[in-house]
Amino acid sequence: MDVIDLLWNTGQDRQLREVHEQVNQIQSERASKGVNIRELLAENAELRLRLGLLVRLLISKGVFNAEEFAAHIAETQSNVEDIRE
Image (cartoon, rainbow, N blue to C red; front, side, top):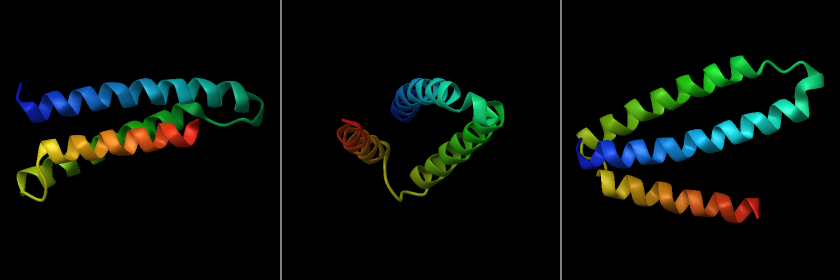
C-alpha cells in the first residue's frame, strides 16, 4: 500500500462514518415523509466512487499530489466541523 492509498483509505473511512451518522439522522427525521434512504445511499456510494477515480486520475496526471489532496481534505473537513458547531 502506498502513501496515496493510505491517505485515501483514511479519508474515506472517516467520510463513511460521517455519512452513516448523517443517514441515521436523516432516517429518523424523514421516516414519515417517504424518503428512500437506500436509493440515496446507493447514489452517494456511486458519487464517492466516481470522485475517487477522478482524484486518482488527477494525481496520476500531476495536477496535484496526494499530500496536497490530503491537506485540502483536512482543511475542508475542519471548515465543515466549524460550520456544524
